[in-house]
Amino acid sequence: KISSIKGGKFIKATDFNKVNAGDSKDIFTKLRKDMGGKATGNFQNSFVKEVNLGSNGGYAVLLEKNKPVTVTYTGLNASYLGRKITKAEFVYELQSSP
Image (tube, rainbow, N blue to C red):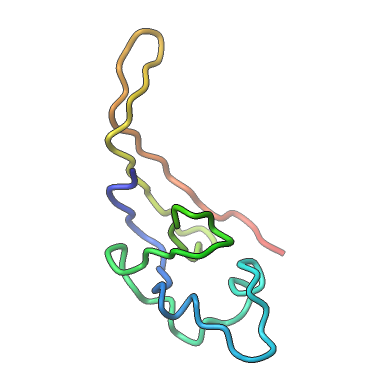
């Protein structure tokens, strides 16, 4: 489970799921378009439940070049070399884009 996301800009589910006439529902098409300043939500209100993200939903975060986003996962039930893992933190950073 994602417990926190720091950095980046979030897209509110209500804004992300809006599709105007003639617009594509494809997630990549939506993310390529200018969000018109709508990518200002926070982690708590950015949950996206959309078929093309899977039935469990997901989060839409805009990565900006050279601005890292830290994601913390908790409630994990795993082990590595006999050591229990319950929490993991990953840092994602966009280094280039087309």
